[in-house]
Image (cartoon, rainbow, N blue to C red; front, side, top):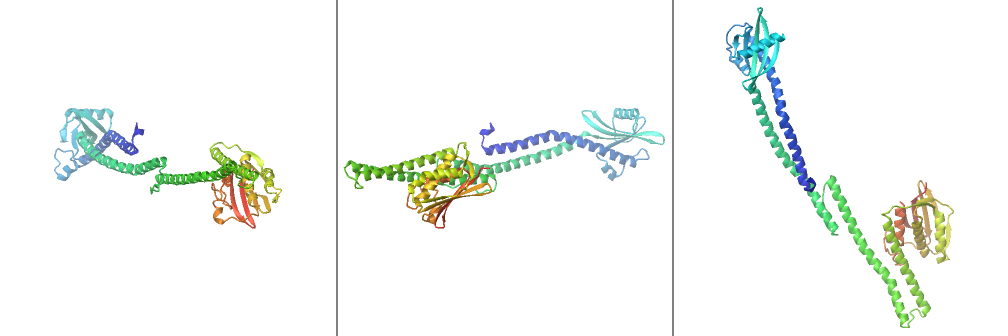
Length: 446
């Protein structure tokens, strides 16, 4: 049931409930504890007062205690001095039956002192009786107090404690309410903000400045908002680039086809004109395949990865043999070194093919490939003697549809980056001496 209540009410209710339970336990056990405590204190008071009474009247003669100071000192305790027959010699009146009962019990139990709690006429008398022997005669000092004194102390103290607890509960409820508001206010703010984000309204920042766990949660939500905003912008840019990149070859194919239908050959002859159409169709096919493959990689990121061991040199030689015919004037130098790794062979083959195609596109005369190992990582260094890349472009080469040296757009390097990242590796492209270098670092097979 409480799960349906707001957090503010839950915190206040739990805090108040704990206070009330504690208060009820105290209200139940406190009177019992206080009564036991004051009963012991009463017997102790009676005992010390009895000793005072006895020491002041040691001669056992009939008389009065005349000193006001002495009367004040024993004002809460009544004393009776009786002989062996139960006759009162000094002190306050006490029921003869009680006196007789006390004398009988002391003599029967053969003790010199004893405590009693005797009910009498609906009340309780606390008694300390002591047997004395003076001049070979038995005397008894009976000191007593009524339970009225104890009950008054208990009630008075209980009322004060109850009043104090009531004040504490009221103050605690205000404090718990304030604490609950302080805790729930940022949570409500975050809830409303997350609802806005769910509706793709993520332009408004979340400003909650706290140094506790709620502040960390707010910071995480704000980081999520920024990432979603960035992804949304990237997605919009991605769609724009796709439409533009696919539209160009489609328009060329369409215009050339219409020209042929009208009997016009843009490139002079039918053969050359259809060759352009074929090249643009291949470009279009490549772009569509890259787009589909990138989508496939993004899908596979959420699935269980099925890796297998393979050797980099063997894979690299297979890919280079497949692409080198595109530019036969380029000389290939591949070191006869190697390292193995565990990963998705097919994905890595696509990544290497995209890299080598890039190198071959810009290389003038030579491509060099070398291998090295460092600790648990293997490094693949691919260099070509093509033109250097503008420093401003280097940081954006792995972004979707980034513009290359010749103004071309594509997804090739984006696919390369995603494949290598999924294998816990890294790739960098840098301007090297007399060319450009690709450095790939991946974990090696143990």
